[in-house]
Length: 234
Image 1 (tube, rainbow, N blue to C red):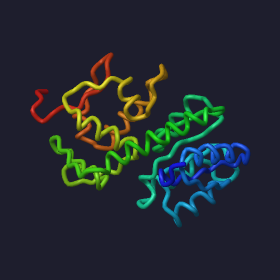
Image 2 (cartoon, rainbow, N blue to C red; image 1 turned 30 degrees about the vertical axis):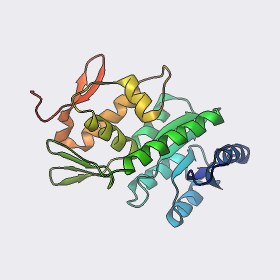
Image 3 (cartoon, rainbow, N blue to C red; image 1 turned 60 degrees about the vertical axis):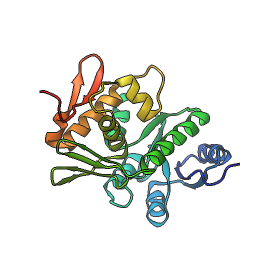
């Protein structure tokens, strides 16, 4: 077993499921802690560092969506990746989770192998982003990759982890069209035919958060999105 791949917090009130998830992740080399409520999760996150949270939506007391909301509003916790587990498959629940800043979303019953692969993908991209100090600049939009800092002019912009990854990818590929399918594969590690509303929802939120600079993100009708370069004509 490879030790030190990452420390994962599992938040799941179903003890059978949490036991299976913990076993699978530890077999894959992760270090895991399990809690059975949202309140316990926040208490542990405040006290100890984690590389990622696997979070159930439906729990007694504070549910997963509220836990996510609190984490994303906390300056010290907001960058922790979150994978949401839920028995609900309705589109509205998926959208709410994504808008709150969930990095990935898996509907029960799910493949434990798929969960492991999703976690590895998220942590691999995070490590790649942190491996070098990149300063990406397009017009008034500036992204310091290592510092996880986004500014538009003199204003600092707070982005959820997936929104940040999406912006970094678009800036690194400025001037090149990115299809929805390519973005799903590169950001979410989704390679199957699924709804593309995930991409559209994140682009919409990203444009809103970066304000005037949101005009730099162009929609290529029927294809996908492109970040305009400094020298592009309107």
